[in-house]
Image (cartoon, rainbow, N blue to C red; front, side, top):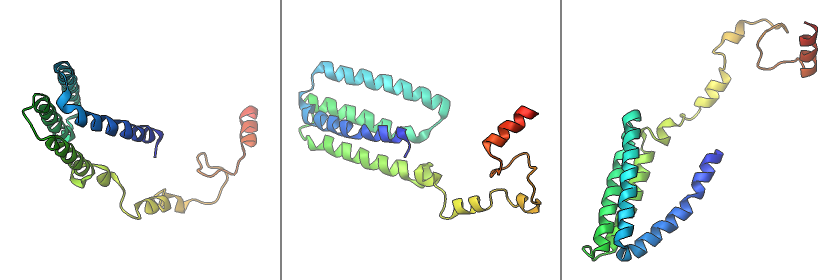
Length: 162
């Protein structure tokens, strides 16, 4: 794992707690809070649309649909149109499951599609120069070497004398 993955994993717990608090307080949201949510969603949609314009990444459509549907359910919950709070919880769980499947599916170019097949790395490592190094005779006069027998001190002295 790279350090950036570790930092993004640290965000999961606070986000999960925030979602739990939002689900619990959904019937009590004020009109001002809903306007802030709507404005933040609009800014996010503009940002994502700009990214789509430059990257043409279709991975964003299902999360955007769920974002808008969730915002609609928050409005329905706050204005007492939806009397079943479990529907919002179910929507969040379906969103989570579809995001997992959508991200990890091989047809989507996700992680499973980017991974090397079993044994591929070993073949690449064993055949590093694609056979070009098999015709070389043993000599210490190569300009480029992956394993040099010359020490740093000897290289420094060569550079100074030349």
